[in-house]
Length: 122
Image (cartoon, rainbow, N blue to C red; front, top):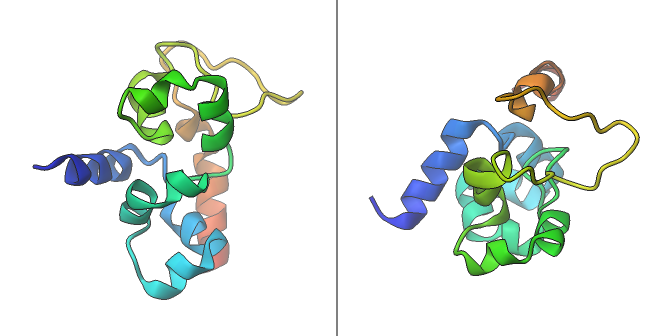
């Protein structure tokens, strides 16, 4: 498996990229029928497109510029190393609360994601 295929699979398997929201927010992806996971790996992160509502690749990269030199997209770096290195997925605000040990934010936002999918007819 090549690096691109590996990265797309990791993104898809992780659930960190909300494909329905990504396609809805970035209409050219939705209208083209392109796989949102492939688009994110190939183009989206370079344009700082967010894979979901809480992860901000521009903020993540600006606060941890070493990740770009490590050969990872910001999202994939977060998946593989972010929690272990106590890196935040975006700018903290008054709503930010530390996650319990071992928890991934995706589990906490699943009800919101599911509601958005129903609303979008997915």
